[in-house]
Image 1: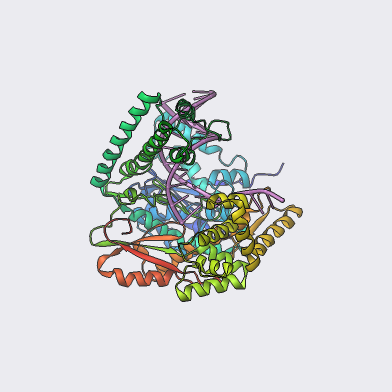
Image 2 (image 1 turned 90 degrees about the vertical axis):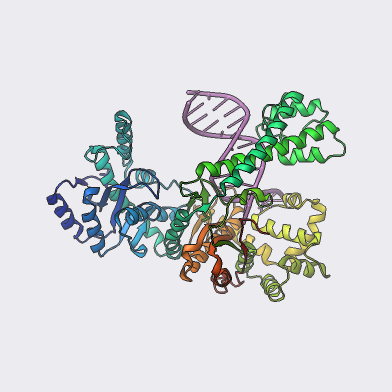
Length: 595
DNA sequence: AGCGCGGGCGCG
DNA sequence: AAAGCGCGCCCGCGCT
């Protein structure tokens, strides 16, 4: 049996000046990997918790320093000439070390093994422990259990576990050792193939940290007033549903199906587990149906209205008040590499899925005094990227023409396809848009038509014409899938790579999804690029949250016009693709709602 | 009481 | 030939 790479690792706890000096001598040694960095804190609050233990390590040694030695740790880091590596160091350790210990490690000197792991394979669990167990030593995470059990048994928290409790300091000291081992394994798999993607992630990371710390101010009295209005309404509907139909849950498929049956309507569709489907679409269909009895229509629409009220309160407004910090703001967590395509995600709360049409929810956010919101979003970014990657001269020209004349892109396509002027309002234009997006998603004709709300017979000629006039619409997916098949026959995981080298694998039986991964992943990178460009233009401190193709800003009122120009300039990109990436900014002075 | 899952629904 | 992509959060439901 091969010896563990961790055999012979020595772990040290700094408890004296001699220990600290020994650590300093060790840190000054030459080594081939970056210096591993890790910290333990009193908790997970970025703004309030403080550092308790600072750990440094390389492949052979791990050192843990209690915070009374923080000065020495910072001195070692300041003087260190090489690079550092940490796991999730950009989002966690670096900001804590900066705020708590007063040292901001230069971002270009930092490697993050979590980023490396995500770039090597976005589908795999990215925690230090699972990665270490898988890539270094099956038992690498064994200490974690020991520490968890010990903390539970002694009723210790991360704030109170004694520094010299061996499972605490020793497994703390092991973490930077694991990180350097991970670096040695993962970096060669990124270096040379995805350097540009990696550098982009490193550049974006501190900017996302700034956004989380800044947060969005909540209009509390507004939120409370809306909540009581909506809850009152919901309660009245619920009590009617209960007394008239015995329904006590707005989501119970059984109860709702039974009540509708009593009112004379049978639900046709089922979920994949066989229960009757009671979605908005199904109930909405009944509520609008001329054939359905009045009672069933009333019942369906009542359920939907109550559900909507519940959603607005439960998922959004009430959650905002619960998550609100003592500074009156909400500090979402922005996760840089959670999605398989390289998109960022957001939680606590998710500010990327606030209702767009119902103005109530976004209205709960107000710019700080003497500030205004500016929202700047890319225009048809995924389609522009699709056109560029397809190299279809007609599509590229259509975008050029649309931009030059200020015409809607899909109206340009529809005008070309139908040989007659088509307006932005026309259903023809809507069908062309649906068919175009279906290409990006890899949808078939049936789904395409259903989404557009027309029959497959109506959609087919539009879809065929689109493929004929713009052959790149067929050839790009064709090329991607042909390459994916070739990968499969070589025994590789089928995948695409974006222009930065980002590796995007798909499930073996869903090759068609690669078309979307490439467009979505490239667009995700374009937003990350835009974030760095905005920062380079000097507006780093005004960004609040990224929303896939949009950045929300909070800008001093006195500089709105000027900064709006800077933002548009920074987010416009005529270089990266053969179709310009354009954007559109709007100013909101009162709330996060466009007037 | 807590966990995981499916269904449902909000966004790009 | 046929294939809609990516998320997070809430609830109901069945399980331990």
